[in-house]
Image (cartoon, rainbow, N blue to C red; front, side, top):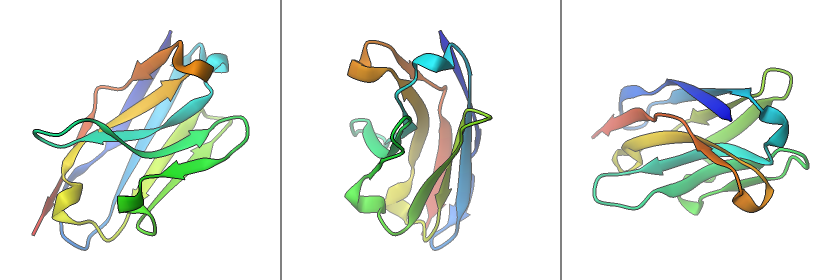
Amino acid sequence: QVQLVESGGGLVQAGGSLRLSCAASGRTFNIYYMGWYRQAPGKERELVARFNWSGGSIAYADSVKGRFTISRDNAKNTVSLQMNSLKPEDTAIYYCNAASLGLAANYWGRGTQVTVSS
């Protein structure tokens, strides 16, 4: 099992910034992907940004490219998401995710609310 603990989030005005962090513990040797998803009210959960943990490649949703930056600390098994130039449409619950290759194991954090006011 892998446990994911998120921190950060909150309320910010449009154009502002927030930083999310996620710490993984447990059987982290099995992690191949680690990153962030979000789910807005009435919408499906979507990928925001994700690391391929071994190769270091990164995937971003088109809607956040140039505004959000994902980073990692291998030694601490943490990933962070720096969110700049936030927009009201970024309002959602943000979930940390860790998954094994092939998604045989897929873990989620509890989620943290991000609200961007206009």
